Every structure is written in C-alpha cells, then in structure tokens.
Length: 496
Image 1: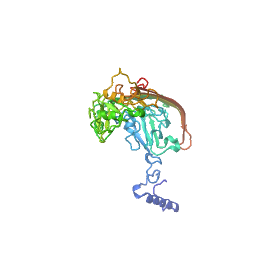
Image 2: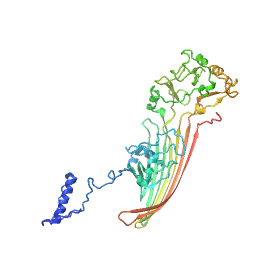
Image 3: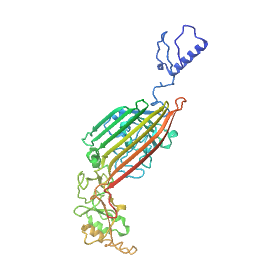
Image 4: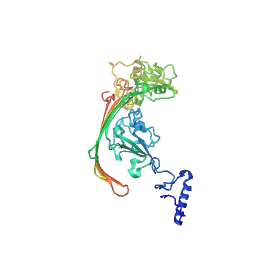
C-alpha cells in the first residue's frame, strides 16, 4: 500500500477506512514490526511493501524450499583444496565421497577419488548438482557429479536448496539442489596461490588458480578464461594416533585376514586331516579343542598355531606396528581371538587435478544474449586397499610334492587324510592336493590409480519474455566422461 503525507483536512470515509485497515494490519503483525515514522510536510513517504511476517530482503531461508547461499569467500578462506570440504561443514550435507574415502573398487557406478555431495544423507544421486542452473557432466553411470571437475577459480557462489525439488527437476533432486553460480562479466586478472599442511606436518596441499576476463569495446560482450591446478599429498592411517589406538584396542576387532600361511582344511569336508593328528599338534589343551575343520596356521619356525583360543601356540609378535610384511599389526581381541589389521592405508588420498574453463557471452540486443561455455578437467586420485587374500574363493589347490619342503606339522596333517572311495581318483588321501590359506603379503597392497577426464561444452541463447520478470533459456550441451582405473598389486589367480 502507498502512504501519502498527512493532510490537515478531515479524513474522508474512504481515507478513514484505509487508515483503519493499516492499523489492523499493524496490530496483526505486531507493533515491533513498525517503527515510528517522522513525516514532514515537505516529504512524501515512498511505497511500503507488506510481506507478512518477514521483511522482503533476501530469499535465503524464506522460500517454500529454503535456499542457502555460500559465497566464494567461504571457499577462499579455508585451508582445504576440495570444494566438498567447505560444503560438508554445513548441517544440510552428509559427507559423501571425499578425500578421506579410500579402498573403493572401481566400477560403472563407483568412481574412487570422486568428490560427491550428499544432501540429507539420501545418497549422492538423490541431490541434483547444477552449474549456472544447467546440468553438469556426470562422473559415472549413477549420474553423480564429481565436483572436483568444477573450476574453483570461477565460482561466484553456491546456492543450496535443502528442500525436495523433485517436482521441478526430477527424481534426482529428491533431497535438494546444489547450484554452482559462476562469475559473470569478469574483467581483469585474478591469481590465487595457496598451500597448507596438516597439524602433524604431512598431507601437504597446493593450489594455483588464475582467472582472466575482458569486456568488448562496446560493452556488450565478455570473455573469461580460468585454469586451476591442485595437488594433495596422501596421509597414511598409521601416522594418526586415533587409528593406532583403535588397532591396539582389544575391544575393537578388525576382522582382518591373518598373514601367516595356513592349511585350509575346512574347504574340503571329505578330505580333512584326522582329529587325532590335530590333537597331537596341540597337546597342551584338551583333545578336540582345535577342530580338524578349521584353518591351522604356522609360525616362522614351522610350528602350528590357531587364530582362536587366545592365539594358541602363536609365537608373536603382538601389538607391534612395524611387525610383518607391509606393516601388519596383530593383537588378541577381548574374545581371545588373534586379530590382524592392515596399517598402510590412506586416511587422506593423494590427488592431482588440472582444470580449464572458458566462457563467452554477447548481448545481441536488449533482452537477448548468446553464450558459449566449455570446461575440461583431469583428475588423478590414488587409492589403496589391503593385502589380497588367497582364501575362500581365492584358494588354490597345492599338489603334494616331495621336492617342495613343507613344515613337519603340516606333513603330519596331510598324511593323516584317508582315501574316500566315493571321490574321484586322486581327490582324497595323503597324496591329494591341499588348500593353502594365506594373505599374499609378498605381493603388496592393492593400489588403484583413477584418472578421470571430463569435458563439456554448452552453447545457447537466453533472454526476456517481456512478461513480468519471466525469462527463457535454450541451449545444447555435449560432454564426455572417460575413467581409467589402473590396479596394481592384485595377483592373477591362474598364476598363483
């Protein structure tokens, strides 16, 4: 409603009704919503917009689907080089794939090293990620967006719609929308260099970005080019006390595989060693304590031990971070079982990223703009898993060969097996093959290097409809995602 300056003339019936309505609105909204206004005879009061219980000033947190805007300063004033590190500090986000996610096998719907967003914990493919309101190039077949591919130097702000937006954008916006708004009409040169290190003196992160832009002579066009280089060094779990303390805690079993070689007798039910032979190997416990169906391991001197019953006859080492090949640590759990953990994994994965971004736009006339936008990114991330096991499905039959030395205790177990007349010839008995259960510690951990190349080009027209504040935007988009996963340390079962 519009209020004019007060008049000394008596209010008309219509004027009186207007002031009564104003008073009623003021009473309904509360007196605190209106401050006393001093009006002079020479001044006219401008238009006053009544918006209900909130003052109209920003759409943040006041729309039916609340929108929260994160400015570019939030990304600049952080030591982290990944965009997800800043956004995951907000309560709307549950960390998805980050630099602290490791040991994921690559696949059509899994991209190790990708940085994804997860609104409300509904999954990274249930919130839509946009760039300037347009869909970005997916990182894999689950259609998630790797935000590592978004040029950080060109980001103006990030809009987060935390309510469901599937009615507008589709089912992939069930948890909300994250829109990266890029800078527009940028002029000049902006160079940013950043380096940081963890409190422990490792995990160095380096970033260099440059953004250059200029307007045309007539002011109708603008071109902007940006590049970004980021490198992050890895941090190992064994270099953090909270990991080591957890490994040493007897009440925290890891369910890891035991490295020392063992005889997997339980895999062949009709060709197990005799119970008497097993009892003879463990004379300090009652007969039958160690079953002839369980895996029997061997110490370095060839003597047998078990992983349960308090690590019966195991000769160590225990609770030693540097014991064994590839830094395996062994302990006894509170239940009396021998437990082993791989300690050479990453708590923060190494990464190197190169990205290039370019955009040009030109105002053909008032209310009509042509634009083209292109981006390319190359992201290399290293992942590390544990040691590959050669048990269960990995077990291979080992032939009995007199020329191959084996521990005397193992020989006594193999010789106690009896021939099963119902089995195939040579499948049972002392001379039949036996199953070796072990972790392939001589082969090293499983390492995966994921190289992700993503490019996208968008060209279109946008303008005003001339009706209220309605606008239109028509564009075509072409992109490509190429992922190369190189795995080392994973042995060939055939050769094994």
